[in-house]
Length: 394
Image 1 (cartoon, rainbow, N blue to C red):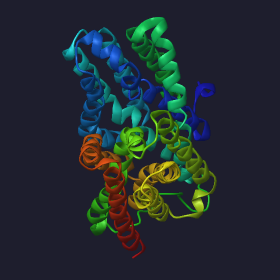
Image 2 (image 1 turned 90 degrees about the vertical axis):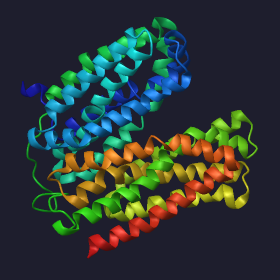
Image 3 (image 1 turned 60 degrees about the vertical axis):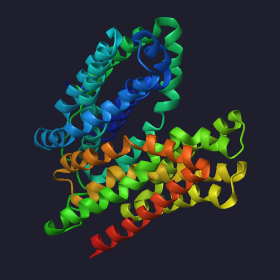
Image 4 (image 1 turned 30 degrees about the vertical axis):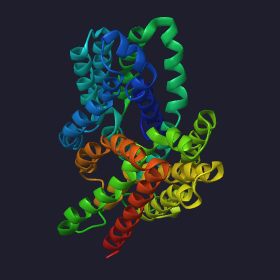
């Protein structure tokens, strides 16, 4: 059995791989199969994308309870349960005949979200390498950047061969055949600390009487950045077109944010421990704000839009790491999964509205309204990060 045990760095890489499988088997399915699902189930295409909203809402409601359970019994059983729920959800989706089956499937996938897509994998990685949690979580988000270029082509390639229903069954099988055994093999064990008696997150940065204030400050700082990160990519091509780019060029320029995110995460994984995590959050917010403001200041154009997209990608790439490492460092390792669940509950509700708000801004004021709104939200995040840094230093 020890030959199958996954712990330390091997465990982190293994969970990163199951993350790619989990996100590819859920979040990216509507992106590729939206028209086919809508046609066969006789539902609007908008409802197909609404599956993501159902997933977010259900997962958010369960997040705090799943977090408490993870802190109490450890992540292994929770990860296994999440893979089972995701596999069952994809099976139900493959056999769905109408809107009822579709909704039931996404509710089941929503159950899986906090168990195998978000907070529990982060908690597992933090426990697998407690002496280097930040680097481990950075490695996980870096490897997670590989999900779109792996999942999207594979999903597209499967559909002509076995159809979207067969593809969903194959994704369900992936959870049972690959993810469940990998999660079963995860072993969390104490690790020797490097550079300190208990490693990162061993002691919280805020006093008990300041935790509530710090929690809501962190929520507000993450809210602005996350709202932009969930809302802007959906509008990125239309924003480029609004600035005069042909659709083909808008797609090419808009896709630059993905490589920019990966470069930023590679840099953070290699050198990020030289910068305090909240200072990294402040820097990320500043880069995102500058990037979003550039097209507004210069009135659009290819170069200004490209610079804005790259700035957004660089800042949002490292901000993802701040969102998973920040709560660990500020509030401590104890109860980390529960804290993540409590943060994700209001954040995910807020993020579910981001695409609609950005679409409304675009229809009212065009591309500059979208970019101006993004820049304004990031300026608010900058102020809140400064406030949070001052609080933790005191």
